[in-house]
Image (cartoon, rainbow, N blue to C red; front, side, top):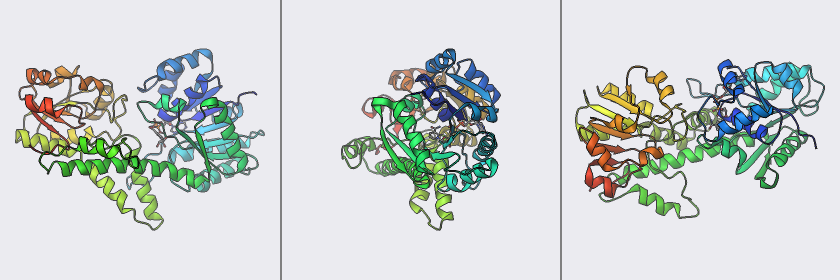
Length: 447
Ligand SMILES: NC(=O)c1ccc[n+]([C@@H]2O[C@H](COP(=O)([O-])OP(=O)(O)OC[C@H]3O[C@@H](n4cnc5c(N)ncnc54)[C@H](O)[C@@H]3O)[C@@H](O)[C@H]2O)c1
């Protein structure tokens, strides 16, 4: 059977991984973005962001002619393809509610293009949108601009994305479930057929449901993961008050309970990134607007807000006043294997250190070019982990890159002025590090 042609609007982490995923399996894909620089890189086979495994498949897809990037040109893109995924950003407004301006603009362009197209076309929302968006905003705008009827003249689905940055491309090829919310049966069947052909024998479980249930599944999933993080951080904070207690052992034993599971029970400096913070906020605002106050989620957020500042408190406990002290920061990205710094926990940490008068030197294997645009000349950047900790009065590990896990107690004692190490991600063994240097780790009860 002939493979349908696919377009993706928004070539960021989700859009580009989706586009390359389909292109790598022989589909003809057009990736469309408003960012000319991004598209120029894509057409040269160079990913505009750091994502393991993407480079090779992107350049292969471009060389084979399965993928092309375009700026704008929505009319032509819709004419040329059969299905369009929308993967534009859905950031927060200042009150925490979802900002749908990129969705609206993409949908208006698609609607106008649909008015010129006779053949059946399915639009699929992959961006994370609050319940009601696809039905009330996307469908209405598509119908208004195209002067056509959803469900008969064109199709509409919501297909939330669950990939994780750092393994985004791998996750695209090996999803653990596919959620399809459809306006009508034909739209859902068309998308299900596409995924069945795409995954072939490795087809994950498909959940077919309504538009609003699919929208809520994405928020509920992120809220659950964020809750697990704030929960274990709460237990970590309790452990710190109990001599001899260690949250890492508590989490390991808890995780063996099948009802709980071991994942997302790593105590640390809290969650960041482009999704959890904005999605929790959007769900809270959405829920309140519907007349229900989700107090649990308010607490999840509150724990996450104070958690990164504990690293600074630990620093002050060890060093006293931070004025003029040199503090080394290992890790800037919001998590390992990405250069994304959106809502990274390091941002409030560094801002607080600077407020206290500290001199900050930072190192990250891939996120420094982006960090430089955020901190400008307010902090210094080192070219390696060892250069970063050289002559430092204290060091905070903020991102659990593998590279930092290899550092030994001697690396710290030999290079730092004062070997004070704060392990914000629990990557070092306290039994070893605790005897060789002044070592503080989150969730460790004082001896
Ligand atoms: N990043 C993740 O890990 C992840 C995971 C699951 C879901 N999501 C959701 O997917 C969506 C996209 O996230 P992302 O991280 O890929 O965002 P991103 O910021 O990396 O990419 C969005 C892209 O859309 C482009 N864009 C904006 N308006 C456009 C328009 N009108 N036409 C064409 N392109 C346009 C931007 O230039 C940008 O390149 C969000 O709703 C996010 O919540 C993200």
